[in-house]
Length: 254
Image (cartoon, rainbow, N blue to C red; front, top):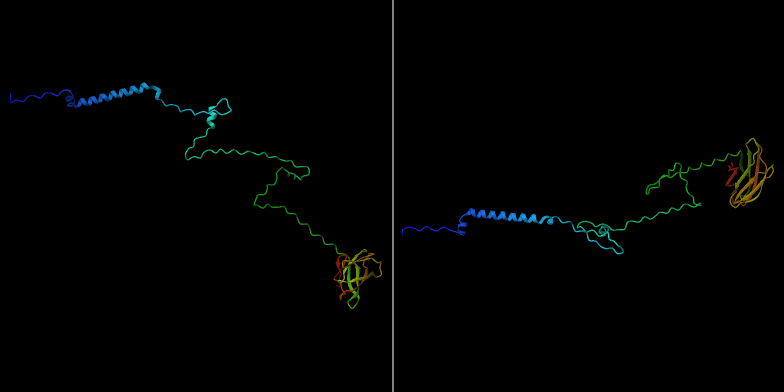
């Protein structure tokens, strides 16, 4: 019949598969499951072959002159790897201690004795002044006792101030007899002519270094007096001595 349409034939094969979406999804899921099973079976079949492998041992080197090689000793002698940013270890030779030889002091050396108790004074520190022991000053010499024999100077005679006869009158204030010594410094350039003691035994005169010294030949009695006289010339216009003493005590009358 020309007026009637012919029924379309149904699609077969790939076209039918494409026209059904659930078939495509099911096929993809099936393929993924199969791949997962294959991968799991492959991982289990390998076993411990893929476990962590231990680190390779350090290389060992044979040292000359040694029969056996100790790997630990050789590895310890190898230089350590340099790590960036770190300072390598120093390889300086350790300091060598020099023995100190103590020489005992000889018999002639002065060795200070250790202080009592075995404790010595600490050494002086640099820049710090240590107190030093001070030696006490010696006491001043005692003044000589005043002689009981005194003297008084006077001029007995003179010649144009170029020569004169002087006298030192000695007087003993003590209660016992006393010896005496007179020292007199005449004008410069003077020459001693003679000296004597009036009315008493003579003593010993001496002129040395411009100083006239007279030592008594007999003691002066207690409360007694004795005149000592002397003759000088070439006095250069002066008739008085510059100094006169009796037993170290200055004479009066100068």
